[in-house]
Every structure is written in structure tokens, then in C-alpha cells.
Length: 74
Image (cartoon, rainbow, N blue to C red; front, side):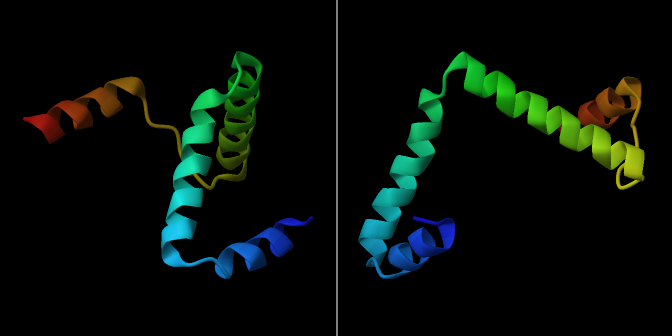
């Protein structure tokens, strides 16, 4: 079954059932193995590096990040 087919089926559920399904899906993410978590972090790191290389985002020095964080909570 494709994602599109699953989405179509989910749209046919009532609100209570969709909410229960969403809750189950989110909770299932807590059951990931260390290998799955490592794979997801590696994919995220690659995505962020791609964004840097494409100029979509810019680097912010750690001192600046900490300065902004401290200012935000002061």
C-alpha cells in the first residue's frame, strides 16, 4: 500500500480515530533502536550540510548562539 493510499484511508476515519492513530504514530517514535536514531541523525546532518553548501542557511558562531539564548531568557 502506498503512502497516498494510506493517507486516503486515514482521511476516511472520524476525528477520534485519526487522533488515536496520530498519538500511536508519535509514541511509536519512542521505540526506535539506537541504530535507527543514529541513521536519522546522520540524515539530518547531511540535510543541514546541504543547506549550508547551497547557501539556504548561514552558520552562526556558538558564542553568538549563546549570547542570543542568554539575552532571550534574561
